[in-house]
Length: 85
View 1 (cartoon, rainbow, N blue to C red):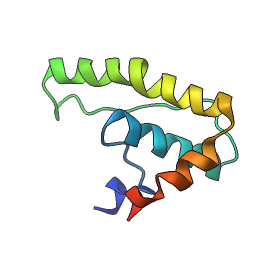
View 2: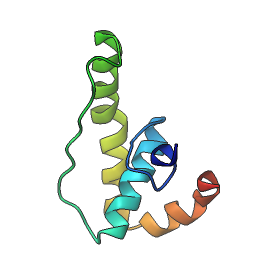
View 3: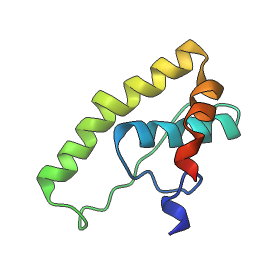
View 4: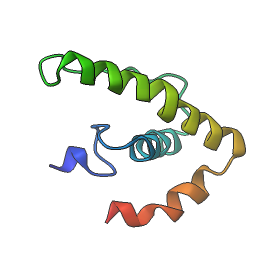
């Protein structure tokens, strides 16, 4: 499904993959200040949903903040562009 790919709308994958997709959106929109997540409660058991939320806060958000603070967004995205293939 195209929505799962690197330029698709769905944020699915490990913390690094999700962070890269967020950074791609940030780059293409020339900056974003807020992201709203919608997660289907029917799709995952409660414990897995809680773990996904935890990972967003403990792994994804810090990685996005670190890359944005360093100004290395373009470098990261070009280095990891092989994932897009």
